[in-house]
Length: 344
Length: 253
Image (tube, rainbow over all chains, first blue to last red; front, side, top):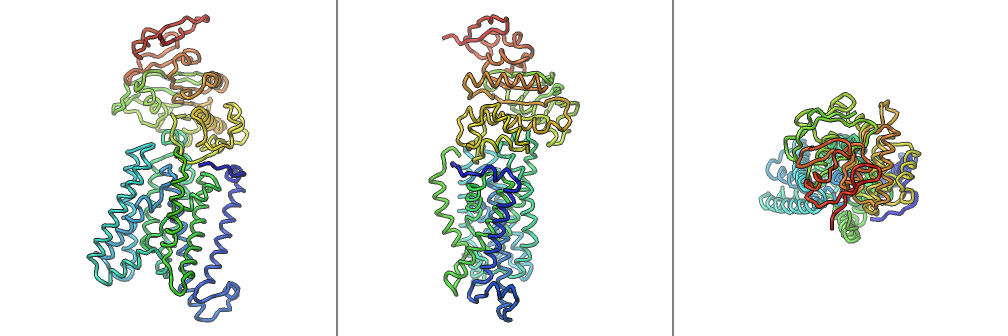
């Protein structure tokens, strides 16, 4: 894919250029958050929010519904886009993504199994769901990795996509089977959860994400230099000082933890992990020290905007945000496949 | 100095134990037919695979005892061509992994005739251009960290760096490598298919056959036309050089 954007090199090379990009994305995210906080069935003006001139109902809506939802959107968006970036770096392939590789659906199947077969109540239900999501994602990650390791070079991309297809199909069938076995109440819970939405965001879920997502993001950010080195191929990267097995462990654990948790909380929100790093790489170049944090900010930005649209486009009804991102991401992915240079 | 103390591999691809050393200031060529174990030997020298028989030491310590970062400042590898996933610019690729001074990158770009390509994506290069970029990157890794107090110029390992170069580029690269060995006290190990390049530029040659190093020494001793014809199963013609070096080898029609 040809990139001839002027100034890209200096942008990635100079620390001040990096800081400017991240600052810009941060400001954009902040503006999106203010817009989102004010939009909805109950319009709340940003000025009134800032100056505290909001009535009791408005405050409750804002504090109990919008704030946890905004925070969850930021965390999930950052995690999905960050995981996508890291996986693309790890597989040295711009098509790797937690949804395409089956990570998200593996986590989804594990969560569905938990809901139908082991359902507890209260916090047990929530944390069991996290654990199931994490284990599901980890299992898929290990399988996909094993396959990618066995078929090096040009075969890897096809193997990976086919493995993802197989896992997605399997998870779909498993999900169908579980839906068949489920009681009416479980069925309702399954379908509500599975649509990919931030609408169940309450403080309990958001707090769990606030505790678990930042360490996963931190682990990914620390892997940035290693991911750069890995682009040289394993032997050269080793000679350049990379401990590749350690890097892989870090990325796999962080991605599985993060994606598993996100899926357990919000269902499958597709294509965020593919879309965001792709667009940003065109602008910023492939260096992960800038691309990873920028993707995290960009993913948070995109999910907050998409979720606000999902909440407000069909007011008072709500479109699942996963539907919206898939509608956006699906065509973009096809476009990528069409114009991808045969060499990469 | 890199020393092999009867080092080798038992697991395939195997490598019979080798006792020898690579000293700073020399250009060592590794030659041999396809599948003779040249790249396997390189993975032993770089520490990518750990010796299963004896040990490999670099500057007095076993290669596993160095931390990856320190080791990276003392030896670099230019592997055979790897598929590239992303569109790094040539300049960013040369600097990748070593955080060098910009001046060093510019100097290496000039040295390897890459200045006009500096902002181009590595996905848009020809095979030979990409090979020169990767050589520049390997050199950058060694030269960016010279202030680490290393006693010499470090160890540069190259796997067939000339395979996609035209003859002019081959000559300039081999001359440059020899000059780096002499002036910067680098130890340079270079897997080569072109035997005349090995004979012309190398100080010593190791000859590999079926996972064994069957000869090692100055080119005029190792590159014996009759042995080579047998090992490569090729019909060769040997032409004497006016300066008395190892014979030129040509394929008979």
